[in-house]
Image (cartoon, rainbow, N blue to C red; front, top):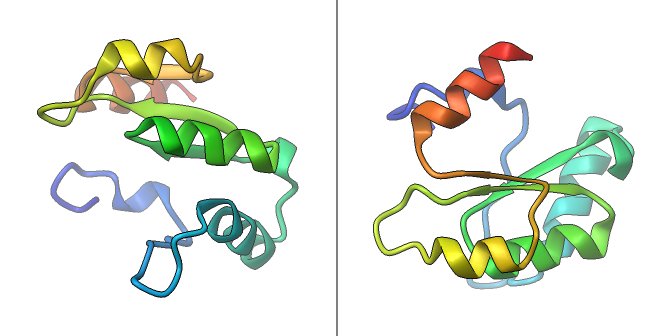
Length: 97
């Protein structure tokens, strides 16, 4: 996040581990830590399984499709709430908020 200038936008970060592969559980853990309802949150992910996990928790999903090798067409077929193809596009969106 620091590399792309995004660290100031996040209060809590939950990453996967060898012990925890349950993305919906991780999303709910962050919501609980922030005391935020699913309807008031957004999950940002770069894969189809991120879209699916966010949908399971009732959280909106923004797809970060800028990584090399990302299949933008597959992500688009999952109908994320927003799809960003570059970091710059995502940063512009955040700044407009």
